[in-house]
Image (cartoon, rainbow, N blue to C red):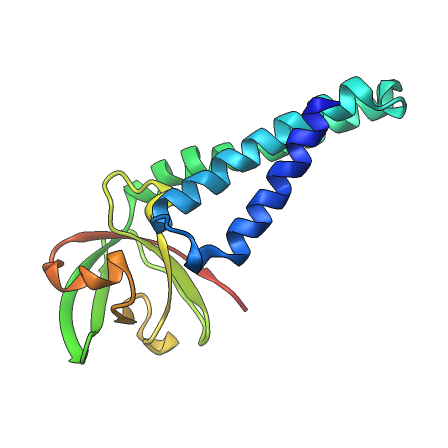
Length: 185
């Protein structure tokens, strides 16, 4: 029964962390890492509880159904935090311009590396990662400020609001950036 209680408490803790994100004394990256670790523990504890306590999960079809769901959950986490960063590190963008367009507001112009580039629509966004290797806990979401007709070139207009955005002025042209997107509809 303990594994079920652990899973439920962690689900509630993750929801509370999401709702209270801006009030918590945690850096964004630590918050993201805690969510990933929490998701793994919830999946494992929930599956353990379901398979060991649940009377109906002892039926072979349901047993394998719950095992398949656990595998899907763990595979999606492994893909996001393992496979996707490797794939993204092969192609990316370079900063071609970094200029101040207003008080505390920077515009980054990104050009794709050979063989790269994305197409996007108005209103979409991308996860931008400046780290090497591009670990997912270090990416941040930003909306495209360039028109879709400018693709594959990407422009982002970003106001300094936190740790990462306050350091954008230090990025020099030529720096590599991973762009994961487009997302949104």
